[in-house]
Image (cartoon, rainbow, N blue to C red; front, side, top):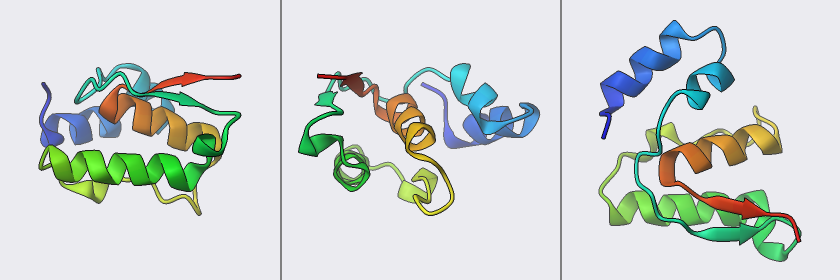
Length: 90
């Protein structure tokens, strides 16, 4: 499991955060399935799940995305890379 310094180093070396996230394995694999077309597909619900998981696994939540600066897909990608969330549409 990579530590936070390795993750930050990978992010710095990549041209964009999206490129970096594609090369990082999930920090914790929870296999939580979220239907994006249900009310649970709401960005605030997903971020809430991630905050609770971060507390449960004693992970600093400074990595949490700022929902005001990123789009929905970017937030989904970050949360998926951190906790191995599985998204379905429908």
